[in-house]
Image 1 (cartoon, rainbow, N blue to C red):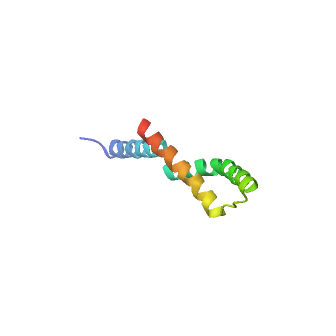
Image 2 (cartoon, rainbow, N blue to C red):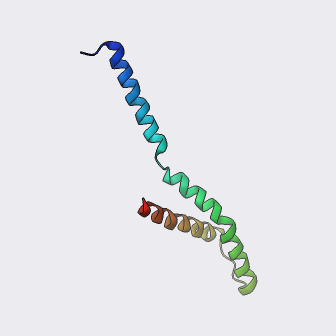
Length: 82
């Protein structure tokens, strides 16, 4: 039979283990944001080049959606490798 102190210690260890497991999980939504943010300058630069050459100006919403789409594709691939 376990003493009250042993039971509390066991509960604390279980709680710590759960917190550690949670900390090691990948936050895919955060990762998606970071990847899209990193892609934005390149996507924007390409959009500006296209606008200069063809006179076709892309809407900012389209540029942002392309960056998010790139992030989604990359995350999809990263999840496959796991």
